[in-house]
Image 1 (spheres, helix red, strand yellow):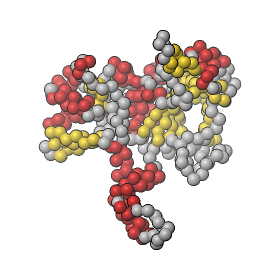
Image 2 (cartoon, one colour; image 1 turned 30 degrees about the vertical axis):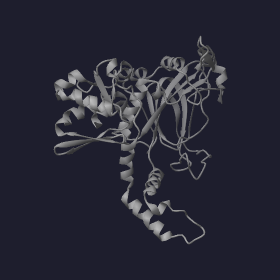
Image 3 (cartoon, one colour; image 1 turned 180 degrees about the vertical axis):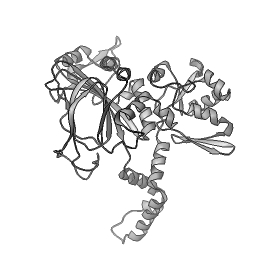
Image 4 (cartoon, one colour; image 1 turned 120 degrees about the horizontal axis):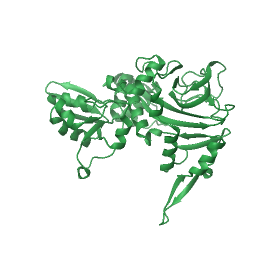
Length: 403
C-alpha cells in the first residue's frame, strides 16, 4: 500500500522536489524545491477551474473569502441570492462582481477545496495515506498587485505548491517552539530571523513547519496572477494523546466521582489510577487508534437500481490494516473490523490499494470472487463506487490497480 500511495504523481513529485524519502521530514525543517514535471501543476488546478468551482456551487464565508488591499471584502459585494421561479433563494457568488474585484487586484480564497474538486480530494487522501495525518487543501488566487495575509503562523505543517504565476514570500523562524491553536501562550510576537525570502514561481514547492512566521504578496508585482494551493497537515501531539486518555478515563468509576471540597480528596488513589491508565495506553496506541477510529468519508452510495458495480476504490482516510490469522484475515479501518477467509487476501490487497479497481479486469488477476468482495467493501463503506467524476480525480495522476 505504501508503494501505491507514493505512485501518486503529486506525492512522488513533492518528495523529489524537497529531497525527501517518505513523510519523516514533515514538520522538521523549512524546505523548498521545484517539480520536475511542468504538466503536473496545470493537471492539479488552474485559475479558471477554481473560478468554475466558485460559479457552480453555493459557497459561503468563511469557506470562500475575498481580500482587497489586505482587508476582507464583505460578502455582500460579491455574493447574491439566486432566486428560482418558485421563489426559492440560494446564495451564489456573483461572478461579474467577483471578476471586477479580480481585475482591480484581489485575493480569492477557497478553504477545503478537496470538498468540491475530485482531483484535490484524491490528492488529500494520498497525502493522508502518506503522512498518516489529516490533510485539507486551501486554494489562493491573487491577481495583479494585491496583498496577501500579513505576517502570521499556522498551527499545522503546510506543503505549498505554486500552480500558476508568481508570488513573493518571506518565511521566518518560530518565536515559540511548536505553538498550538489552544496554547498557554498567544505567541503574538514575530521572529526577526528570516529563513528564506524570494519569488515562488510556477512549479515550486515549499514546506513550512508549524509555527514558522510567513507572509506572501504580489504588491508591486504589477499585472499578473498567482495561484497556489496549501496542503495543511495537522499532526498529532502529546496534548492530543492526553486528551484521548481523558476520554478513556471515563470507563473507570474513580474518575467519574465528584471532586468534593467538603471531604478529603483521595489524591493518591486518583494519581495511581491515572498512572495505570498512562501505562496501559501509550502514544503509539493512540496513533493506531486514531487512524482506525476516524469517521468514514463522504462518498456516492452504491444503488443497484442505478447500474452495475463496475469499478471501486478504497476511500478510507487512512490505509486499512490487513491482519493475517491463519485461515482468516481481518481488515481494520474506520472503526470497523471485517473477518474474511484467507483466500480473499490477493483480492483484498488489490481492492484496498488506494488505486481505482476496474472489476472485470481485476477478476482476471485476482479471481471472480473479487466482485463479491468489492460489493462487501462498498456496503461497509471502506470502498466507494468510481463515478466518472471521482475517476477524473485519478486520471493522469494514479494508475489503476490492474495496470
